[in-house]
Image (cartoon, rainbow, N blue to C red; front, side, top):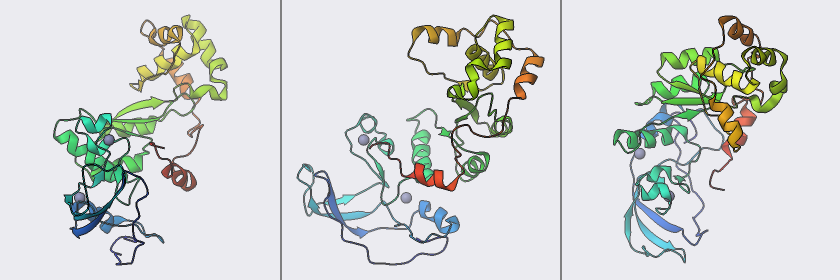
Amino acid sequence: MYGAGDVRVEHRPDPKIEQPTDAIVRVVLSCVCGSDLWPYASMPATGTGRPMGHEFLGVVEETGSDVATLRAGDVVVTPFTYCDNTCDFCLKGLHSSCRHGGRYGLDGDVYGQWRAMQELYGQGRIKAIGVSNFYPDRLIDLIDHNEVAPAVNQIETHPFFQRTADQQLMGERGVQIESWGPFAEGRNNLFTHPLLSEIADAHGKSVPQVVLRWLIQRGVVVIPKSVRPDRMAQNIDVFDFELTDDETARIATLDTGHSLFFDHRDPAMVGQLGQVRVSD
Ligand SMILES: [Zn+2]
Ligand SMILES: [Zn+2]
């Protein structure tokens, strides 16, 4: 498929056994699935195209040396994701979340993955599904074209990138905002910032405690990471004071309105992130 409505039939290179756990399967029957209709209706035109199809029935032609349960001539059916059937997720029956899994001919397909998770959610096998780094346009698109809305959207949220408009929109759509990088990883000298230090002193607290308190008062879920027990104790000790309206108004002036890390809407960054493989 090269774009919406643009489906071509082409020759493809013959597959080869690359890993000892691979099998080559000759497709005998396949079909057009509902999942194909989304890109058929809306996929942006591309010069390279991508293979369609999944959920096929086929015959095993050849197997790698480590394949013990299949041999040439076996008839097989596949779901639309592949998996190793041995990792912790697979052993719980959550094959579409396999640590070494993916989709045939198509990685980085957020909607395909979302629908696989949605299915597990519908079966009651997982309790909640969420996303990360979704800007409002992508979030609304995901919600409007799927059955289950994300429970959370984890986004960069700290005093220098406050995300109030994002939070408002998520609230309207029933999506909980969760902060990553609550301390901006120390950028802009957050830990010694004059305004934050002044507010911290006024409450006999530290700057990180003020930041956590500020996020919690805003209704932002925050999970600060620390491996040090004293920091963990400090991070949870934020429920015995309250920031005043004046203090939160002053913190609001620190918002720069943009990321201190990288821009998830920059095409070059999107391309780069799309190459990252969690299993590598
Ligand atoms: Zn399908
Ligand atoms: Zn697995």
